[in-house]
Image 1: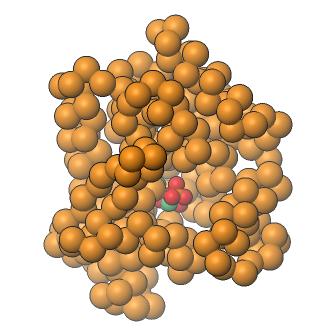
Image 2: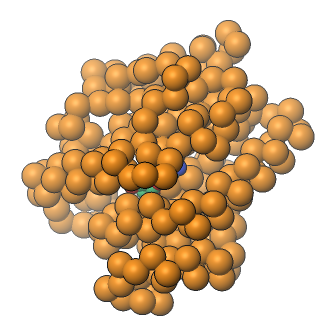
Length: 224
Ligand code: DC
């Protein structure tokens, strides 16, 4: 069974997807991490570039590997190097939207995501895949599609807490500004824009605890 969780940055996708996967004893797939890893590769190879050909060559030449720690969280390697922390740097946040809007980058990542989905399906397990286009493009036949939303202020506060926990000093207004900019870029891009699938269940997480969201979705999954 495949469960997709899409929504804007800070809507609670990662916590929810990880929690639902644990609840169902399934596998968690954070696809944003894949676009972040390609972005990190571009920043390292061509600092300051916003040229799509640089992103195309990184996507073509890089090996991305994913795996899980015992607590269910995902690690990601770029060409053999564990970049799970490096991909959360503010410079990656600032560049990931343009990199992920490059069609060749998306084609390469979607292929990889579908391969992971096929492997989980072969074992009759659960895959909880989170991103922007999981329900609309990558896993259109998913048994359960969720679209998470939350007020901008709530999302900025969550992302701000994450960044502070990672040692980055940022103001709430900077985080909110960066989120709104990224939402706009992710929603307005021509290819695979952020939008709810027609058959997605909308869940507003603004006033819900993470545990409430996780158990609501896990119950929906068990009822299918
Ligand atoms: O979920 P996140 O914030 O880690 O995602 C980082 C960026 O990657 C996000 O701004 C848009 C892009 N992304 C995407 O285009 N498609 C996905 N399936 C997942 C993420």
